[in-house]
Length: 113
Image (cartoon, rainbow, N blue to C red; front, side, top):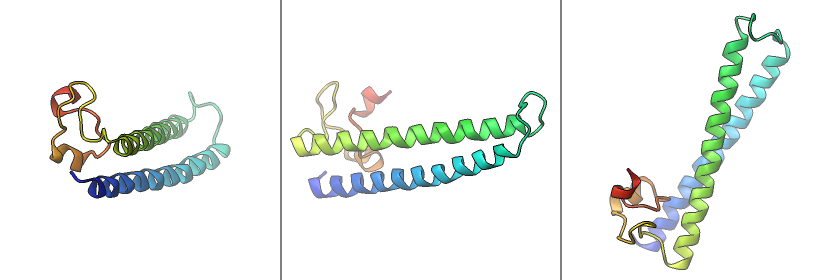
C-alpha cells in the first residue's frame, strides 16, 4: 500500500474515533443527567441496573475509541519511520487487504490470531 493511501485511511480511522468519542461523551453526559433524578439504590431501583449497564457500555466503547486513536497514532509513527506494513512479530508484509480493513494493524493475519 502506498504511503498516501495509508495516510488517508489512518486519517479516516482517527476521525471516526474522534466522532465516536464525541458521541459517547454526549451519551455519558445524558446518562449522568438521567442518573441524577434516579433513585441512588441500584439494587432496588428497577431502572438503576439499566442506567449502570448503559454507563458501563458507554465507558467500554469510549476506552476502545481511545485505544483505536492510540493504535492509529502508532501506525502513523511507523509510516513516518518507514516501518509501516510489516508485521511487528515476524517482519513479513501485512497483506494489503488487512491494511485496507484495519490500517492501524501491526501484525500479519497469522500473528493477529
